Length: 212
Image (cartoon, rainbow, N blue to C red; front, side, top):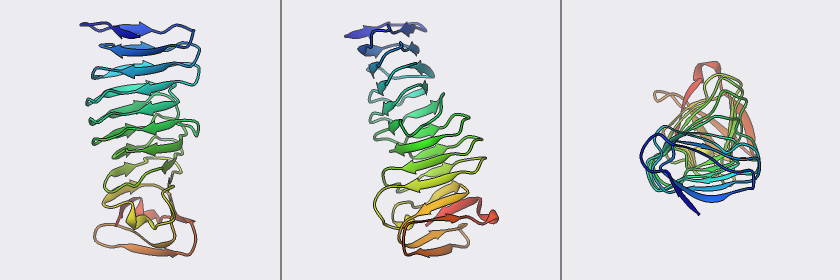
């Protein structure tokens, strides 16, 4: 069914029965103890969504949405530019695909390990983050911040330079593809040729790297 709370700063708490619901005009959404499936039909602005226990799914509307999202195992974006902050750790059991638009994902202050797709700007946490891009990144900003971070990709064996262009990266280790991989500052490029998939530790002076 559809729940539309209209004007005002509204809070909706779902039942413990495992709800399948479309939601409009809700600023705070709290899930129940079972698996909830929620579709947002209006734009989110500084919203707070915590779907709590269960294997939960959240689908955003085709707007420019800003929200903090917690305890959500599947997060699907729309066609707008979404800015999402995770309020709980990203795990290997989490699916995040923010869809079309110039999307930003900010990780929570945890040790995050998981896959993301259709994220143009990725901001890490102070923990040790291991992030896999499950799609090609043609241009974007990636800053995994503090911690012993790793950046990976799963789109075939092609080298990084074919999938990440003009991306500023703050990582400690790159999981590269076969072939000639480039990284370095704009003024100088370091090159590594991999004969098989490999992890390459960045030199200390390349904390902020430009992949070309």
